[in-house]
Image (cartoon, rainbow, N blue to C red; front, top):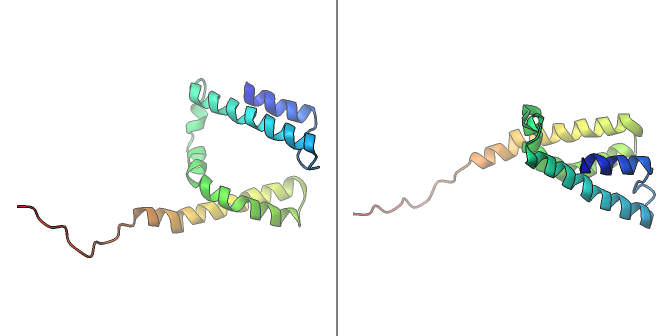
Length: 125
């Protein structure tokens, strides 16, 4: 409930960091803490949280670090050309697509790579 309350309060007060005002930034970041804590407590409680185990959400969790690394560049690039929901949807799709390709072509193979030792392990007698 805490997370939804924070989201609702931000929406109700029409507060955003877009104007980069001191009060806007303070409220956005303070309420963001409540939102994150609320959703974290919800997930940890286990109460009706089975939807968090859905395969698509677990996959997003798997590629989330790559998404984090590239989202700002992609969203900034798209925002200069497309505005509104269409731009956000395209940027999200490109972010997920890039992160998925990065996971399957780079990260996953590297995680499975085990270098061959130049010196065999000595046998104990």
